[in-house]
Each structure stands twice: as C-alpha cells, then as structure tokens.
Amino acid sequence: MTTRMVFSGFGGQGVLTLGQIIATIAMNKGKEVTWMPSYGPEMRGGTANCAVIISDSSIGSPQVITNIDVLCALNMPSIDKFLPKVNPGGLVIYNSSIITEAIARDDVRTVAIDATNIALNLGEAKVQNMVMIAGFLTASDLFTKDDVQAALQSKFGGKPELMAMNMAAIEKGM
Amino acid sequence: MKILMKGNEAICEAAIRAGCVGFFGYPITPQNEVPEYMSTKMAESGGTFVQAESEVAAINMVYGASAAGARVMTSSSSPGIALKQEGISYLAAADLPCLIVSVSRSGPGLAGILPSQSDYFQATKGGGNGDYYMPVFAPNSVQEATDFVQKSFEVAERYRTPVMVLIDGLLGQMMEPVEFSAPNIPQFDKSWAVGPRNGRERNIRNSLDLSPESLEQTNIRRFKRYDEIIANETRVESTVQDGDEVVVVAYGTSARIAVNAIEELGAAGIKAGLIRPITLWPFPNAAFQNLPASVKHVVVVELSQGQMVFDVKLAVAGKLPVHFYGRNGGMIFESPEIAREVTKIVRGE
Image 1 (cartoon, each protein chain N blue to C red):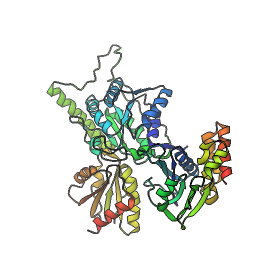
Image 2 (cartoon, rainbow over the protein chains, first blue to last red; image 1 turned 45 degrees about the vertical axis):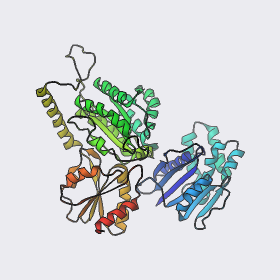
Image 3 (cartoon, chains in turn orange, green; image 1 turned 30 degrees about the vertical axis):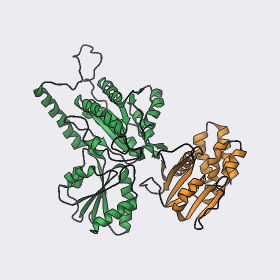
C-alpha cells in the first residue's frame, strides 16, 4: 500500500516541518518514505509545499504532482492548486481558520481543523502545523497518537516545554 | 538506526564519518545544504571548512590539501562544476585523490535551479583538457549517495584519482531514511604526499612535464590504472530477464521514475527490464552484451536532450535500435509519460 501526500501553505506556516514529522512517524513504523520539498524560486508570502510518500514497498519517483491521496492544506492557494489533483475518495485536511470557502469536491473526504485559531489561543502561532496532525488522527489510520508522541520525543525530547506545547496543539485539534 | 535526512546533508555526514578532514566550496543552488552542513559539522569534527572566494579557488585548495595527503572534498552544481574543470584535469594529471560532489541543475549557462541530468557529458567526458577520466558514481537514493561518498574516498585513494558523485537537485533536496555504516577505508600508502622531508627525497605533485618521453610514459601508467578501475569498480543494476521485449536505460533520478514506468508497462502487458548504470565512468558496457533474444528495443530516458544515450549506442554496437526520451530545463517526466513513450516504440507507432 502506498499513500501519496501533499502538505501546502504559506511560507512560515510550517508545512515542510509538518511533512517531515509525518514522514518520520512512518519511517519509525518501518515504512518506506520520501519527502520532497518544492524548492523553486518562491516569493515571500507565496506558497510552500512538500510531497511525502509512505509505502510498504520501495518508492520510485518522490514527486507527487497528480494522484494525491491526502492533501493537507493550510491556506486557500493550496486548495486552488492541489484540490483538483486529489484522487476520488482521497482525504483533504484543511485549515478552516483561513480556508472559509466550502471544499468544492463531493467525492473526497474532508476534515476541517481550526488550526490557526487554536494555535493563537495557545499563544503560539508557530504550532498551527502541529494542530493539523489531529486531522490525520481522526480521519486516517496511518498512525496513532502514541506514534506521534514518539516522533516528537526524538525531535523535542530535550525541551519538555516545547514537547508539551506541541502535544497540547494536537489535542486541541481533535 | 535509520534517520530521515536530505541527500545533500547525508552526503556531508557520510564524508565526515569517512574521515574527510577538509571541505572547500562556494555556494550555489541546489547544493547549498552541503557547505551549510559542513560549515558547522566539519569544524565540530576537527576538520577544516573554507568558503572560498570562487569555485576555481575551492578546487585548487582541494589540490593543495590532497597533495599534502589529506582526505578532502568539494561540491558544486552545474556552472560551478564547469569552473572546476581546469582544476579537475590538474588533479587527474597530478594523480591526486579527492571527492567532487556535483548536484546538477538545468543548463546550459546559468539556466535554472531545478533538477536536470544535462551534466552527464560534463561528468564523464571532462571539460578539462587532456587524456584523463574520472570515476563517476550516480546514486539513485539518499542511502546510495551516502554509501558511494564513502566508497569514493576509497576508490580515489586506491587509484589516486579524483572521483565524482553525481546527483541532481531532486536527490539533493529530498529526504529519505538513511543508515550510516561504519566506513572501513584501508590505509593507502601516501608516501607521495608533499610535506616535511625528514630525510627523504623531495616530493613534487605537479602536472607540468616538458619531456614528451616522460609525459607519454606517465600517461600510459595512468591509463593502466584506469584499466584496473574499469575491471574492478564498474557497477550496474540490471533487472533484464528472458522474455523482456524492451530494455529501459536510466540512471539516478530518472531510474527511480523508470522503475514506476516499468511496473505500469507490465500491468499493460509489455515486459520491460531496467539497466541502471551506477558508475557512469566506467560505463557498464557488459550489461548490454548478450541481452535476451526477446529484447527488440532499447529506450534511454534522461532528464536532458540525450547524453548517456551515446554511451548506450556504443555499448549496444548497432545490434538493436536505441531510442531516446527526455525532458529538460527542470521539467521532470512522470512515469505514465515514460510508459506511453515506450509503448509507442514497442508497438511501432
């Protein structure tokens, strides 16, 4: 089984890091993974995105241009750009704090996460990407909260306050 | 333990673990993570990091440090490698080992920063002057890039030659799980190195030789070492088996995409095998000898207008039709695109 994902948002919303965390979780579970950033010329305030592929077998091309299984969108331009390329039956996890229009596809599953607002209420806008992880926990069986905790432990283990903040962000999103 | 790492960074970590003590480079996209990583980690490991004033300066610093017997490297991307070509020729001529990492972007000229494979000629045919070759490893994953960096230092020192690891922006920028092995590089004799004489004869590592008799013999001796490299270090992956109608040839990033295309072709009833050259020089000619009689076509796919295809044609030696499909400029084919082109060729459309 192979899951092809795109994480997309404004530069600064943490989508590249979010993709890395998801890839790390899958790697820790023994899956084959690739993470590929868009690294073309981008302007400040433009969109950033990365592709993550998780598979039980070896992965060929790391690019995800079409046939998206999971789209994690943190801003409206990401919906405009990638929604048409989501597979029928695919999953769209979106940041409903700033994506206020309805998702214009009735053949995909959608999960709205009030990510930016939840992060602001926690007093740390930077964790809006972490809030989005809640969408994976509620709408997919790719990994569990324990898997997330283990992956974050390896990243933030030395900084308990960051660990607590990030786990709190995920809890609030659920 | 596996860790998730960018190709560019994994290369650095591999080099440091392989005992590389000097990095000399100059920034250029898409390989900037290499000097960035080295600027902190090389210092932490007790080595030397220099951001030189230019690519030309960097490759000549490599020359000097290598001549003194140090295990050193540089890295750059397409136009930057072009600037290093003179130095590479001098390193080859002075029989000096080193690693050159090339993370190619699109060309010609300054061109674009997105992945491309249009530097196959640059890597394998040299832009530097004179009769010389340089072993070139073309990994197709972050793990292979890691492994071949370590292998490169061994090949460089065993045969006293510069060695290149050639990837592209995609392999440099992508992250994959990687596991670092404990590098086991033998101690090679470096009595040729310059430095304190301690009573021995003076060592000079120079390429200038105005005596034609001596220069010819020096070059012939070097080509005997090239023969050993061809015999011992040529690497290829082949999945070709009896019954395959078509052989797809691709290296590096293209080979990853070709693997998907071959699966799609198989599902559509077209049996295809892959030949993936891992060393681009020496080119794995033997993989193209004695192909099964079922094979009717060879299709080379590259992210260029067609460069490796010429080496494939030499290897196939006119026995089969050799076709080409490529994209360039930073455009990357998707696997259905390759499958469609191969299908057209097989069906004679």
